[in-house]
Length: 382
Image (cartoon, rainbow, N blue to C red; front, side, top):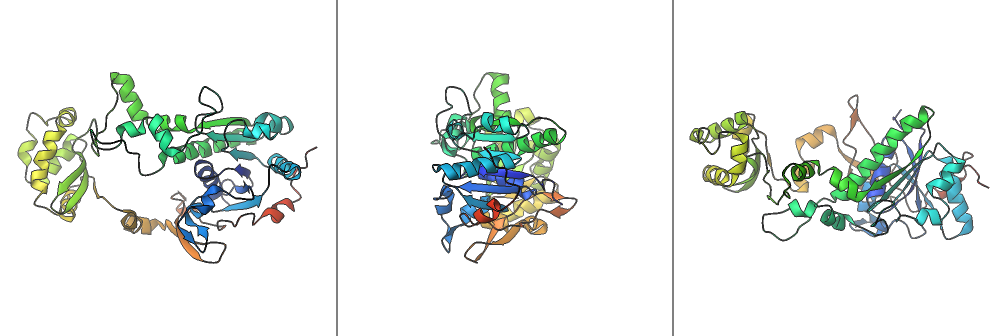
């Protein structure tokens, strides 16, 4: 039995942050009912398409059921409200005010069902001077400071290649929902969760934020380097680059021993983590003179032999074929509505050594409409 089995989540979400939160809850056993317009979640049209079905959409919507409701139609709007009142959790990522105008805001629904957990994800939050502004991952990375510390010094603004603001908000949402479920199951009331992407972005930037508060200076772009640790970045070698993370005195000594540069250990510029960080440009140049004669594989081997954390710089085909990924069985197969089998990255979580499985394939648009509304558990509102 999965931990959230018996919990029903009604999801009014599209694209990334909300669907990701819904999928995390579904992976843990919640019955996530995805409410879509007749046009469907906008991500359904995103390539790559296999037999017309978006693999991007599939990657965020496994283990869910899909129903189609036209919220501009009075009858469908009533069905949507009935569905919400029959569930334990409502998850939505419309702009603030949309659900209220439809009569499905938290205040209206909780009056009938005080135990309801209602989670709203938005760019900036439900209130405040930016509440009515829209936002996407790149705009949130910009306003939230991420782009100011991403890339090489003096380089053009670049975003993190992974849409971290979307997925950070989704993680905060799923965590908050499960936390409130415990309170409700102990007899407490539900609540309205306000999950701003901006707040989530600043929340996961705890080290950068605390650096600013502690120094009154803005963190800066360092490429792959670290403001407080060195050697701790990507290094050039004979046939490319590899990453080395020797963040303390012992690891630094072992790094120097591995390449026959023990004189660097006693160099007055490098005798502490703080000094190595202050002089990391010079340290990098000195280390790379030795790495220049060695392949990346050789560098990784000699560092691993001495227990120094290091890694190749993988592309995604290499990352997904790593033996550790294979060991956990994280790459899964699932079927899409047209019958084709596709691969996806499943949940990385194990419970007592058992991984979480895909028990429901990603749905066709409206695949479960009749099934869901045939359930006798759907509460009928006045």
